[in-house]
Image (tube, rainbow, N blue to C red; front, top):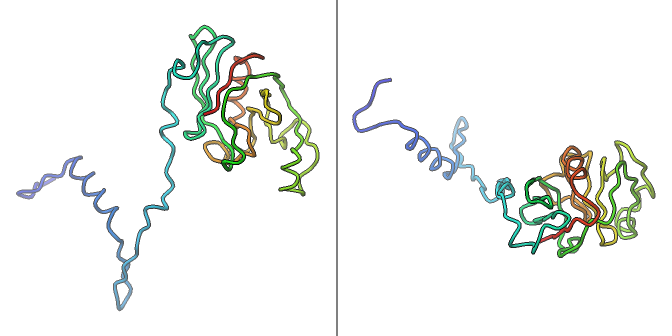
Length: 198
């Protein structure tokens, strides 16, 4: 590659130039005129990279008795710490669609079910009268392969067969994980594991 005097192409200048180019309007040329196309960067989908940030349990729990699960609604991440503090897991999750469906605070795992069945809540049936009254275990079940039932009525941490939901505001109140992640968490969490949703 030949060098032009006064111009050095390196990674830094390439990245700076690319960033500047992204911020400028694009030009589209037709046969008779040049048209400026406005790029609306505010509508770009932003990935939630902060959700994959490791956290320490101490700011959220006074101890790790029975293990601890922290669900961060904003970053759409579920953190798990074992009772002995030796195991830490971080999973991407789905979270409730809206703030009025979101519940925050302290609860605990009260039941564990492999192959859960599902019934929509009364509020879900009002919003979606076409939904079935009952779905048994299997690939059509909205709770996926495993569910951790919380002390709050109707709230669960569960799997999903619809992997598009993970990392999004997509649930009716529950916290969803990939089926392989809920299976792993199901094996580690106990009845009595403390849960905090923030």
